[in-house]
Image (cartoon, rainbow, N blue to C red):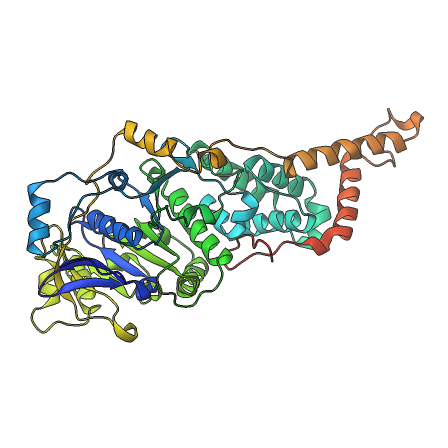
Length: 486
């Protein structure tokens, strides 16, 4: 058997199982207990998409996926699996790969600006309560209305400081600002800075087109995010991936149902996205997942148990690969039953029983077929990967990064004029005006005099500026991220 041009070969049981490229943007699920083969399944799907000219984004949580950048090595168990499933065209080869890293250590830095992320996702990252989130909303609203760029965390700190200082004056237009809430937000910022999040905010910001490249042979690039350190900060990991998903949703044009996806997005450790998330955010995530397929983006969640995914999201995942689950406790048995019930039954076996019997590299597979109808579930031996199993060496990674077309664009940070600098200048100019306007004889008098203090002059200047520039207010999308070019 040879590969087909319009689909990806997954493996074989009684029948060969393929993922139809025309339906790959209908999302998917890769589930199973630790050590059952989820990572290899992700790897072979990524290889398949790349070979078909589809770019892929995936987070490398354990460091194993970096092997996609190198050709595999012939091993007896790989050759045996290829023979078992009748893969006559099996060969080893590397994939075009771009390495990314929020910390800039194992790949190109990925950055966004505070303004682009927006208050909703930032509140999630900071773990703010409802009142604190409201104050953060006000800070963003004032900055958006005034056209103040919040590029990095020092900009946000300056903006929060201004909002706190001018809480009384701003409350009539924007609502009450609690100084205690501002203090809590500042402390939360300090915590995420200690986790390294300050490196994520700044410029040059990521251009999504750089994640949607193909090489000279027409193969899609595999964008591999080094996440072994990032996963130690689960909220930062989940918020970053949600931000990236939101950017894709907001910025990509509508394409309907294309012949093949524009991009495939693998969301590993998917439960982290939904843990402790407020319902309002979950509703918006479900909306993005439902609508983003019309942008040509397929989202594939990778997790241990399907129950990690909210029902309203799980219902949208049409292509499913279920590896083994354990069933030692009543809760685990319930999870196995729920996973089995999600498949279209196969009269040849009982899915609930088989899920607990699957070996490593074996899975129950159901993909969307004609008219988007799920296929009958099939017990499937997953095909072996053509790229390397396990990580590449540090030397090999450095070589791939050195050859990347994106190094000159992202590896050097830029710190341009933004909210921090502008607020500082406004304060200085206001202080100078206040001193100039005050009569010489009152310059040494107490603050009880009638002259404007520097702070009052700044408020007056800022209020006047708001009155003339409010029409420039920036627009935000479903998840609060900045809408560019609208």
